[in-house]
Image (cartoon, rainbow, N blue to C red; front, side, top):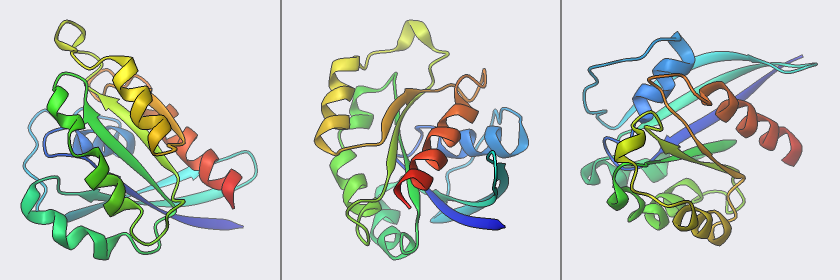
Length: 169
């Protein structure tokens, strides 16, 4: 039997939400992205051992001016990817606001915390201790570092989230 899951992606503008989704869905690195205005959508079939799942992936615009409309889009979400940029410490500053948006309709919504741009090793400024603090404070499903450019851990991120959602059903 085929299942359907709504996955939302959240995080400040420029952290790599669109690039991550494009890499996951199309298998390519998108070098020139434009600012997501409001919400965009991606679809992907996901295979588990015994289930075929249609993933509806919601790409939330990260700019401040879009945040007030996003809470109306989280209804029915099964899980979320919350992204921050490993090379920009300030991308962690709005985590609480993003958690509030993601969990507006479901206080137990499974959230996977993702540090992006792992390929930019010499520019990484966010320490694991800072991230673990947020992971524990907000009871995130897990924390993973990813690179959309090199494709490192991209599939794993979606596997962890989907498996976490299934476990909580």
